[in-house]
Image 1 (cartoon, rainbow, N blue to C red):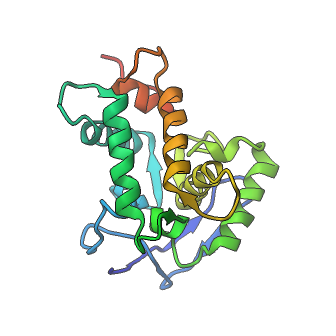
Image 2: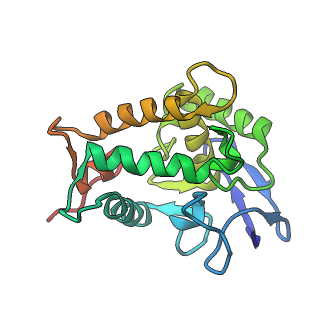
Amino acid sequence: MKKTVLNAVLGMGIGAAFVISSGVQAQCCSATATVDTTKKACFTQIDKDQNATATCKERAAYCKKTHSDMDANKDGKVSKDEFMDNQDKTFTARDANMDGFIVIEEFIVVPDAMDTAKIKEEKKKIEDKSGKDATKKIDSNNDQNVTVVEYVVFFYTRLDDADTDKDGKVSKDEYKKNAEKRFQKADKNNDGIIEEDELIESWYLVPEKK
């Protein structure tokens, strides 16, 4: 996998920043990188202008593409079967060593400057500043922009929540049970379908007016 240089402060505006300084290589995908994004998610899939911040507009566009990808029959809606089938394929694709478990480094592209200890440190800083549930939102400080740190901590928290036996890795069964909870949470009107607007709202975004 190729690497791209991030010359940015990977901070959240809440006193929990750390710096990847100019010239330091950060492991992340770019428009020219040879990353198989079906196997590993990357912040720059959302941050299209690659300025180290994902805006509301960029996140909404990513949500729409995600919704379309999950909508197997292209009827404009995502059923629970479609959602769970997508999650099953996601787990299989991201279980890089095929051991039946996934860890954060398999699930997303983690910048070189953020090992597990650093992720836990940043997670604690966010929780101390904004509350324990803050890291369950991708925009943890509600400033309408998402940094690389927030992105990584958000997905680390998601996997940590899924890891019910707290062995430091997520089994397929744990992942699927967590996926069912996420479907139920996103399905605001409990009709068994996730509309595009519901998926956008589940990412703490306001749907566009039609």
